[in-house]
Image 1: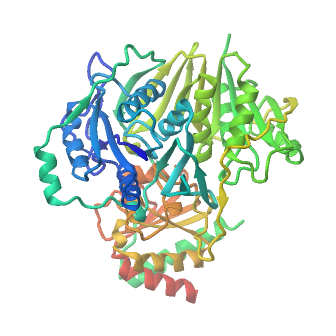
Image 2: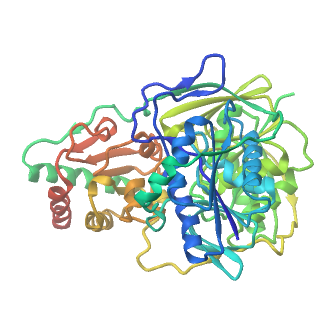
Image 3: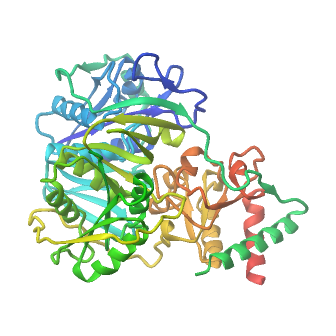
Length: 266
Length: 323
């Protein structure tokens, strides 16, 4: 059974973004000096793939990381988890803003991993510039069954059983292959720690790079600008910090909460 | 010829808390008298929904009923209905779906069915002649990306704008009764029975009591739940707290979680990252309990209590219980 996990990587969310923009004369984001790591959703997708292989040795996991040479360190980190194959799908010089173009590239990336995947796993958001469009659009473009925002996947009777919470409902969705499931973070899919010997092996080993034979991909969306923005202002913008002994502060907060509860009552 | 601005309403979709939000967004974007709404509904829900769409500013309303829609409808069926309705319509269009997981999934999949351009979850869209300028968050809500396209068919999701909508005085209402079959081989979700301790739904709550990484463990969340019960609130959590297993993924608030719009958001042990704040409506009041005076949450809170939650929560619960 072929499981392909597509990983995007993000700028480390803990890193303060002081400046960010498009490289002059291009549509490429200038992320120089910003460390990259797997997003929580990438990690959840990778762990889900590894769990499927743990449960069934017939599962073969291929990890694919689209990106340029700057993503090689991240790929080595992925290789330390010992997927059956891990490669970088070279997207050097390509801007990620056009979802249709990105979907086409991701389809080629899966094709380079294996001709006919049984299951493709992706994080619920694919990188810093996707808000969940790419997994659903890729599934639709490829004609695969889709389940979004699952937090666990198992295999039963040749089908993928995806577990998700949607609105007020907790659901199981049984998908025949080929299927694409986007994964959200959850305690049950926190990425394991790699063995140190595997980290060392991955550091020394070669990085496999696959170059797409895509030709020109038509694009319908261009980026005008990319900029760091401050959080929106709320209220008067001045926080009233309570003062005095803790008991007095608590009493004041309780009074505030009671008033808000009354105001919020239907 | 001007592009049509069309919002979609999915009536009866249980995952949506504001099914008409995209209509209000379309009305604001299109200006007076130009916004259209497509309402997908079962026949018994249709007329009241048309009146609501007019109040939200839709000047042209297409009421699409399908007696074959199940209760609740399946997302795959919504997709088939929308694709069937719009596939033959070659006019230039910006289609807006409601924010949230269902709207976003449908928008993405529909773009592939209709050969349209997906613009994602937009905060603002502006028409510039025949082109669209779309503003949307990137980098976990820390940056804004401005995209431009001249594609005739575009699809985005938008939430309700802050300004109240101007009702349409005399809307044109069309009706279409479809009978698009739900594909026999489409997967139907098996809905699991609700657990007795399932948390109250966070995206529909008037008050949210939420905990972050600073809670340090599950014990603090037990106190948060007790406090939330006293306030009639839902319990929310940040992504790190969900990752740590202290709360369910359904409680996750933020850019990559639920979008909440309560009257009050009480943030406990939370630093207030942009990624988290992106999931809280701008009009929501924030109160914060945190021991770190430098925590960014105090930059956006209305009221702050500067102390460790371990000292505050037991006292706060006791005070509210006594009062």
